[in-house]
Image 1 (spheres, rainbow, N blue to C red):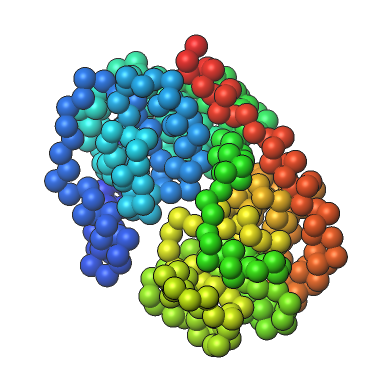
Image 2: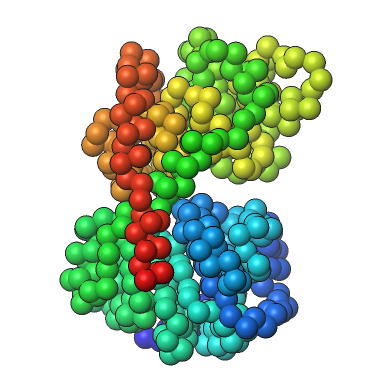
Length: 402
Protein backbone atom coordinates (compact mmCIF):
# COMPACT_ATOMS: atom_id res chain seq x y z
CA UNK A 1 0.00 0.00 0.00
CA UNK A 2 2.86 2.41 0.77
CA UNK A 3 4.19 1.85 -2.75
CA UNK A 4 0.86 3.00 -4.22
CA UNK A 5 0.76 5.96 -1.82
CA UNK A 6 4.24 7.09 -2.89
CA UNK A 7 3.30 6.67 -6.54
CA UNK A 8 0.11 8.66 -5.99
CA UNK A 9 2.04 11.52 -4.39
CA UNK A 10 4.34 11.76 -7.39
CA UNK A 11 1.50 11.53 -9.91
CA UNK A 12 -0.28 14.32 -8.01
CA UNK A 13 2.85 16.47 -8.21
CA UNK A 14 3.12 15.82 -11.95
CA UNK A 15 -0.51 16.81 -12.52
CA UNK A 16 -0.01 20.06 -10.57
CA UNK A 17 3.16 20.72 -12.56
CA UNK A 18 1.25 20.35 -15.83
CA UNK A 19 -1.61 22.52 -14.55
CA UNK A 20 0.85 25.24 -13.51
CA UNK A 21 1.31 26.14 -17.18
CA UNK A 22 -2.18 27.66 -17.27
CA UNK A 23 -3.49 27.81 -13.69
CA UNK A 24 -2.34 30.60 -11.36
CA UNK A 25 -2.94 28.68 -8.13
CA UNK A 26 -1.07 25.63 -9.43
CA UNK A 27 1.80 27.88 -10.50
CA UNK A 28 2.04 29.34 -7.00
CA UNK A 29 1.89 25.81 -5.53
CA UNK A 30 4.89 24.73 -7.64
CA UNK A 31 6.86 27.95 -7.29
CA UNK A 32 6.41 28.05 -3.52
CA UNK A 33 8.01 24.62 -3.14
CA UNK A 34 10.86 25.19 -5.57
CA UNK A 35 14.36 25.34 -4.06
CA UNK A 36 13.01 26.16 -0.59
CA UNK A 37 15.74 26.32 2.05
CA UNK A 38 14.75 25.66 5.65
CA UNK A 39 16.96 27.43 8.21
CA UNK A 40 18.08 25.34 11.16
CA UNK A 41 16.12 25.81 14.38
CA UNK A 42 17.26 24.62 17.79
CA UNK A 43 13.61 23.80 18.53
CA UNK A 44 10.16 24.93 17.41
CA UNK A 45 6.41 24.34 17.54
CA UNK A 46 5.01 23.27 14.17
CA UNK A 47 1.47 24.22 13.12
CA UNK A 48 0.15 22.96 9.78
CA UNK A 49 -2.93 24.22 7.95
CA UNK A 50 -4.32 22.96 4.67
CA UNK A 51 -5.52 26.39 3.60
CA UNK A 52 -6.82 29.75 4.81
CA UNK A 53 -10.01 28.29 6.27
CA UNK A 54 -8.08 25.86 8.44
CA UNK A 55 -5.75 28.65 9.53
CA UNK A 56 -8.71 30.69 10.74
CA UNK A 57 -10.05 27.58 12.45
CA UNK A 58 -6.82 26.76 14.25
CA UNK A 59 -5.73 30.33 14.92
CA UNK A 60 -7.11 30.42 18.50
CA UNK A 61 -4.90 27.48 19.50
CA UNK A 62 -1.94 28.95 17.62
CA UNK A 63 -2.36 32.30 19.39
CA UNK A 64 -2.88 30.66 22.79
CA UNK A 65 0.21 28.50 22.35
CA UNK A 66 2.31 31.47 21.29
CA UNK A 67 1.14 33.46 24.31
CA UNK A 68 1.84 30.65 26.77
CA UNK A 69 5.20 29.66 25.23
CA UNK A 70 6.87 32.98 24.34
CA UNK A 71 10.34 31.44 24.16
CA UNK A 72 9.50 28.81 21.55
CA UNK A 73 9.77 29.65 17.87
CA UNK A 74 6.67 28.86 15.80
CA UNK A 75 6.78 27.40 12.30
CA UNK A 76 3.65 27.36 10.13
CA UNK A 77 3.17 25.35 6.96
CA UNK A 78 0.39 25.54 4.40
CA UNK A 79 -0.57 23.09 1.70
CA UNK A 80 -2.50 25.59 -0.43
CA UNK A 81 -1.49 28.96 -1.89
CA UNK A 82 -4.75 30.49 -0.64
CA UNK A 83 -3.46 30.07 2.89
CA UNK A 84 0.22 30.77 2.36
CA UNK A 85 -0.12 33.88 0.19
CA UNK A 86 -2.50 35.59 2.62
CA UNK A 87 -0.89 34.58 5.94
CA UNK A 88 2.80 34.33 5.03
CA UNK A 89 3.55 37.42 7.10
CA UNK A 90 1.47 36.57 10.15
CA UNK A 91 3.06 37.86 13.37
CA UNK A 92 2.05 34.60 15.06
CA UNK A 93 4.88 32.74 13.30
CA UNK A 94 8.65 33.00 13.11
CA UNK A 95 8.65 31.20 9.76
CA UNK A 96 5.94 30.30 7.22
CA UNK A 97 6.49 27.73 4.47
CA UNK A 98 4.65 25.65 1.95
CA UNK A 99 4.49 22.06 3.18
CA UNK A 100 7.02 20.09 1.13
CA UNK A 101 5.77 17.17 -0.92
CA UNK A 102 5.14 14.19 1.35
CA UNK A 103 8.14 11.98 0.66
CA UNK A 104 10.34 10.18 3.19
CA UNK A 105 13.34 12.36 2.29
CA UNK A 106 11.40 15.63 2.51
CA UNK A 107 9.86 14.68 5.84
CA UNK A 108 13.21 13.72 7.31
CA UNK A 109 14.97 16.88 6.08
CA UNK A 110 12.18 19.27 7.05
CA UNK A 111 11.74 17.90 10.56
CA UNK A 112 15.51 17.76 11.06
CA UNK A 113 15.69 21.45 10.14
CA UNK A 114 12.88 22.87 12.26
CA UNK A 115 13.26 20.35 15.17
CA UNK A 116 9.68 20.57 16.43
CA UNK A 117 8.90 19.66 20.02
CA UNK A 118 5.20 19.58 19.12
CA UNK A 119 3.16 19.39 15.90
CA UNK A 120 -0.46 20.53 15.54
CA UNK A 121 -2.59 19.80 12.48
CA UNK A 122 -6.03 21.40 12.12
CA UNK A 123 -9.11 19.43 11.05
CA UNK A 124 -7.60 17.22 8.38
CA UNK A 125 -4.65 16.46 6.10
CA UNK A 126 -2.92 13.23 6.97
CA UNK A 127 0.53 12.81 5.44
CA UNK A 128 2.15 9.43 5.94
CA UNK A 129 5.82 10.34 5.84
CA UNK A 130 5.53 13.47 7.98
CA UNK A 131 3.41 11.63 10.55
CA UNK A 132 5.74 8.63 10.52
CA UNK A 133 8.82 10.79 11.00
CA UNK A 134 7.23 12.61 13.95
CA UNK A 135 6.27 9.25 15.43
CA UNK A 136 9.75 7.78 15.05
CA UNK A 137 11.24 10.79 16.82
CA UNK A 138 8.58 10.66 19.56
CA UNK A 139 7.40 14.18 18.83
CA UNK A 140 3.81 14.74 20.08
CA UNK A 141 1.34 15.19 17.22
CA UNK A 142 -2.12 16.64 17.83
CA UNK A 143 -5.06 16.88 15.45
CA UNK A 144 -7.49 19.62 16.52
CA UNK A 145 -11.07 20.29 15.39
CA UNK A 146 -11.03 16.91 13.69
CA UNK A 147 -14.19 15.54 12.14
CA UNK A 148 -14.73 12.08 10.71
CA UNK A 149 -17.41 10.51 8.51
CA UNK A 150 -18.08 6.84 7.71
CA UNK A 151 -17.33 7.31 4.01
CA UNK A 152 -13.73 8.40 4.62
CA UNK A 153 -10.90 6.11 3.57
CA UNK A 154 -9.91 5.36 7.19
CA UNK A 155 -13.04 3.27 7.61
CA UNK A 156 -12.88 1.36 4.32
CA UNK A 157 -11.49 -2.13 3.81
CA UNK A 158 -8.73 -0.66 1.64
CA UNK A 159 -7.77 2.05 4.14
CA UNK A 160 -5.12 0.13 6.13
CA UNK A 161 -2.32 2.60 5.36
CA UNK A 162 -4.49 5.55 6.32
CA UNK A 163 -5.53 3.84 9.54
CA UNK A 164 -1.84 3.42 10.28
CA UNK A 165 -1.42 7.19 9.94
CA UNK A 166 -4.05 7.68 12.65
CA UNK A 167 -1.96 5.58 15.03
CA UNK A 168 0.87 8.09 14.70
CA UNK A 169 -1.30 10.81 16.30
CA UNK A 170 -0.74 11.48 20.01
CA UNK A 171 -4.21 12.91 20.60
CA UNK A 172 -7.28 13.71 18.55
CA UNK A 173 -9.49 16.64 19.57
CA UNK A 174 -12.68 16.09 17.57
CA UNK A 175 -15.78 18.15 16.98
CA UNK A 176 -18.44 15.63 17.94
CA UNK A 177 -19.29 12.29 19.56
CA UNK A 178 -19.90 10.65 16.17
CA UNK A 179 -16.27 11.26 15.22
CA UNK A 180 -15.08 9.81 18.53
CA UNK A 181 -17.18 6.68 18.04
CA UNK A 182 -15.88 6.18 14.51
CA UNK A 183 -12.29 6.36 15.71
CA UNK A 184 -12.96 4.07 18.64
CA UNK A 185 -14.56 1.62 16.22
CA UNK A 186 -11.16 1.11 14.54
CA UNK A 187 -9.22 0.95 17.77
CA UNK A 188 -8.24 4.61 18.21
CA UNK A 189 -8.81 5.43 21.88
CA UNK A 190 -6.79 8.63 22.33
CA UNK A 191 -9.72 10.91 21.48
CA UNK A 192 -11.30 13.89 23.24
CA UNK A 193 -14.47 15.66 22.15
CA UNK A 194 -13.43 19.29 22.40
CA UNK A 195 -15.73 20.90 19.84
CA UNK A 196 -14.65 23.17 17.04
CA UNK A 197 -12.10 25.94 17.63
CA UNK A 198 -13.80 28.01 14.90
CA UNK A 199 -16.46 28.93 17.46
CA UNK A 200 -13.77 30.55 19.61
CA UNK A 201 -12.37 32.35 16.59
CA UNK A 202 -15.63 33.78 15.27
CA UNK A 203 -16.97 34.68 18.70
CA UNK A 204 -13.82 36.63 19.55
CA UNK A 205 -14.02 38.39 16.19
CA UNK A 206 -17.67 39.34 16.75
CA UNK A 207 -16.79 41.00 20.06
CA UNK A 208 -14.21 43.30 18.44
CA UNK A 209 -14.80 43.44 14.68
CA UNK A 210 -12.96 45.78 12.36
CA UNK A 211 -14.98 48.82 11.36
CA UNK A 212 -15.41 50.02 7.78
CA UNK A 213 -16.60 53.63 7.50
CA UNK A 214 -17.45 53.22 3.81
CA UNK A 215 -19.76 50.30 4.60
CA UNK A 216 -21.35 52.23 7.44
CA UNK A 217 -22.04 55.09 5.05
CA UNK A 218 -23.42 52.65 2.48
CA UNK A 219 -25.69 50.99 5.05
CA UNK A 220 -27.11 54.30 6.27
CA UNK A 221 -29.47 52.57 8.73
CA UNK A 222 -31.00 50.43 6.01
CA UNK A 223 -31.35 46.66 5.83
CA UNK A 224 -28.35 44.87 4.30
CA UNK A 225 -28.17 41.35 2.88
CA UNK A 226 -24.62 39.97 2.87
CA UNK A 227 -23.56 37.17 0.54
CA UNK A 228 -20.18 35.71 1.48
CA UNK A 229 -17.77 33.46 -0.45
CA UNK A 230 -20.09 33.19 -3.43
CA UNK A 231 -19.59 31.21 -6.63
CA UNK A 232 -21.24 31.82 -10.02
CA UNK A 233 -24.06 29.36 -9.27
CA UNK A 234 -24.90 31.34 -6.14
CA UNK A 235 -24.63 34.69 -7.87
CA UNK A 236 -27.15 33.87 -10.57
CA UNK A 237 -29.76 33.26 -7.88
CA UNK A 238 -28.77 36.34 -5.92
CA UNK A 239 -29.00 38.56 -9.01
CA UNK A 240 -32.66 37.67 -9.37
CA UNK A 241 -33.37 38.25 -5.68
CA UNK A 242 -31.73 41.68 -5.81
CA UNK A 243 -34.06 42.80 -8.60
CA UNK A 244 -37.08 41.98 -6.43
CA UNK A 245 -35.95 43.69 -3.21
CA UNK A 246 -35.86 47.48 -3.63
CA UNK A 247 -35.90 48.04 0.14
CA UNK A 248 -32.70 46.09 0.85
CA UNK A 249 -29.07 46.78 0.07
CA UNK A 250 -26.67 44.00 -0.84
CA UNK A 251 -23.00 43.23 -0.24
CA UNK A 252 -21.48 40.39 -2.25
CA UNK A 253 -18.04 39.01 -1.41
CA UNK A 254 -17.09 36.46 -4.11
CA UNK A 255 -14.87 33.53 -3.17
CA UNK A 256 -12.55 34.34 -6.07
CA UNK A 257 -11.69 37.94 -6.92
CA UNK A 258 -9.87 37.77 -10.23
CA UNK A 259 -10.74 40.51 -12.73
CA UNK A 260 -12.49 37.97 -14.91
CA UNK A 261 -14.69 36.73 -12.06
CA UNK A 262 -15.54 40.22 -10.80
CA UNK A 263 -16.44 41.42 -14.29
CA UNK A 264 -18.75 38.46 -14.85
CA UNK A 265 -20.51 39.25 -11.59
CA UNK A 266 -20.84 42.93 -12.43
CA UNK A 267 -22.43 42.02 -15.77
CA UNK A 268 -25.38 40.21 -14.16
CA UNK A 269 -26.16 42.96 -11.65
CA UNK A 270 -28.04 46.25 -12.16
CA UNK A 271 -25.56 48.52 -13.91
CA UNK A 272 -26.30 51.84 -12.26
CA UNK A 273 -26.73 50.43 -8.77
CA UNK A 274 -23.49 48.46 -8.40
CA UNK A 275 -19.98 49.47 -7.36
CA UNK A 276 -16.79 47.63 -6.50
CA UNK A 277 -15.40 48.35 -3.07
CA UNK A 278 -12.05 49.36 -4.56
CA UNK A 279 -13.81 52.04 -6.63
CA UNK A 280 -15.45 53.79 -3.70
CA UNK A 281 -13.08 53.15 -0.79
CA UNK A 282 -10.84 56.13 -1.54
CA UNK A 283 -13.48 58.66 -2.56
CA UNK A 284 -13.21 62.00 -0.76
CA UNK A 285 -16.83 62.91 -1.42
CA UNK A 286 -19.88 60.95 -0.23
CA UNK A 287 -20.22 57.59 -1.92
CA UNK A 288 -22.71 57.40 -4.80
CA UNK A 289 -26.29 56.28 -4.25
CA UNK A 290 -25.83 52.58 -4.91
CA UNK A 291 -27.64 49.44 -3.89
CA UNK A 292 -24.91 46.81 -4.28
CA UNK A 293 -21.25 46.66 -3.27
CA UNK A 294 -18.95 43.95 -4.56
CA UNK A 295 -16.05 43.24 -2.21
CA UNK A 296 -13.03 42.78 -4.48
CA UNK A 297 -10.41 42.07 -1.82
CA UNK A 298 -9.58 39.43 0.77
CA UNK A 299 -9.83 39.95 4.51
CA UNK A 300 -12.98 42.02 5.10
CA UNK A 301 -15.71 39.41 5.11
CA UNK A 302 -15.47 38.12 8.68
CA UNK A 303 -16.16 41.62 10.04
CA UNK A 304 -18.57 42.72 7.32
CA UNK A 305 -21.35 40.58 8.77
CA UNK A 306 -21.79 43.11 11.60
CA UNK A 307 -23.60 45.33 9.10
CA UNK A 308 -26.03 42.67 7.88
CA UNK A 309 -29.48 41.39 8.72
CA UNK A 310 -29.53 38.17 6.69
CA UNK A 311 -26.62 36.26 5.16
CA UNK A 312 -26.13 33.92 2.24
CA UNK A 313 -23.11 31.60 2.32
CA UNK A 314 -21.72 30.41 -1.00
CA UNK A 315 -20.38 27.07 -2.16
CA UNK A 316 -23.47 24.98 -1.55
CA UNK A 317 -23.98 24.28 -5.24
CA UNK A 318 -20.41 22.98 -5.52
CA UNK A 319 -18.12 20.99 -3.25
CA UNK A 320 -19.61 22.41 -0.06
CA UNK A 321 -20.52 25.60 1.74
CA UNK A 322 -18.03 28.02 3.21
CA UNK A 323 -17.93 29.46 6.73
CA UNK A 324 -21.41 29.93 8.18
CA UNK A 325 -20.15 30.66 11.69
CA UNK A 326 -18.66 34.06 10.85
CA UNK A 327 -22.15 35.32 10.04
CA UNK A 328 -23.86 33.37 12.83
CA UNK A 329 -21.59 34.97 15.44
CA UNK A 330 -23.20 38.32 14.59
CA UNK A 331 -26.68 36.81 14.84
CA UNK A 332 -27.42 36.57 11.12
CA UNK A 333 -29.64 33.73 9.94
CA UNK A 334 -27.82 31.97 7.10
CA UNK A 335 -29.06 30.64 3.77
CA UNK A 336 -27.00 28.26 1.65
CA UNK A 337 -27.18 25.70 -1.13
CA UNK A 338 -27.87 21.97 -0.79
CA UNK A 339 -24.32 20.66 -0.23
CA UNK A 340 -23.83 21.34 3.47
CA UNK A 341 -23.95 17.88 5.08
CA UNK A 342 -20.17 17.69 5.69
CA UNK A 343 -20.37 20.59 8.13
CA UNK A 344 -21.69 19.87 11.60
CA UNK A 345 -22.44 23.50 12.42
CA UNK A 346 -24.54 23.84 9.27
CA UNK A 347 -26.48 20.69 10.14
CA UNK A 348 -27.00 22.08 13.64
CA UNK A 349 -28.26 25.42 12.33
CA UNK A 350 -30.70 23.71 9.96
CA UNK A 351 -32.04 21.46 12.73
CA UNK A 352 -32.56 24.52 14.95
CA UNK A 353 -34.25 26.50 12.15
CA UNK A 354 -31.47 29.07 12.31
CA UNK A 355 -29.91 28.08 8.98
CA UNK A 356 -31.73 27.26 5.76
CA UNK A 357 -30.81 25.22 2.71
CA UNK A 358 -32.24 26.08 -0.70
CA UNK A 359 -32.11 24.28 -4.04
CA UNK A 360 -33.14 26.93 -6.54
CA UNK A 361 -34.21 30.52 -7.14
CA UNK A 362 -37.80 29.92 -6.10
CA UNK A 363 -36.75 28.49 -2.74
CA UNK A 364 -34.34 31.36 -2.15
CA UNK A 365 -37.10 33.85 -2.79
CA UNK A 366 -39.50 32.02 -0.48
CA UNK A 367 -36.96 31.65 2.31
CA UNK A 368 -36.01 35.31 2.13
CA UNK A 369 -39.70 36.28 2.34
CA UNK A 370 -40.14 34.11 5.44
CA UNK A 371 -37.08 35.56 7.13
CA UNK A 372 -38.27 39.11 6.57
CA UNK A 373 -40.97 38.40 9.16
CA UNK A 374 -38.74 37.32 12.04
CA UNK A 375 -35.01 37.52 11.31
CA UNK A 376 -34.57 40.02 14.14
CA UNK A 377 -36.19 37.59 16.59
CA UNK A 378 -33.97 34.76 15.37
CA UNK A 379 -30.78 36.77 15.85
CA UNK A 380 -30.33 36.27 19.64
CA UNK A 381 -30.84 32.51 19.27
CA UNK A 382 -28.08 32.27 16.68
CA UNK A 383 -25.65 34.25 18.82
CA UNK A 384 -26.47 32.03 21.78
CA UNK A 385 -25.80 28.90 19.72
CA UNK A 386 -22.33 30.17 18.82
CA UNK A 387 -21.48 31.30 22.34
CA UNK A 388 -22.57 28.00 23.87
CA UNK A 389 -20.15 26.11 21.61
CA UNK A 390 -17.03 28.09 22.52
CA UNK A 391 -14.34 26.65 24.79
CA UNK A 392 -12.51 24.17 22.55
CA UNK A 393 -9.28 26.16 22.69
CA UNK A 394 -9.11 26.11 26.49
CA UNK A 395 -9.68 22.35 26.57
CA UNK A 396 -6.98 21.69 23.98
CA UNK A 397 -4.46 23.98 25.62
CA UNK A 398 -5.04 22.49 29.07
CA UNK A 399 -4.12 19.08 27.63
CA UNK A 400 -1.10 20.30 25.65
CA UNK A 401 0.26 22.28 28.60
CA UNK A 402 -0.33 19.51 31.12
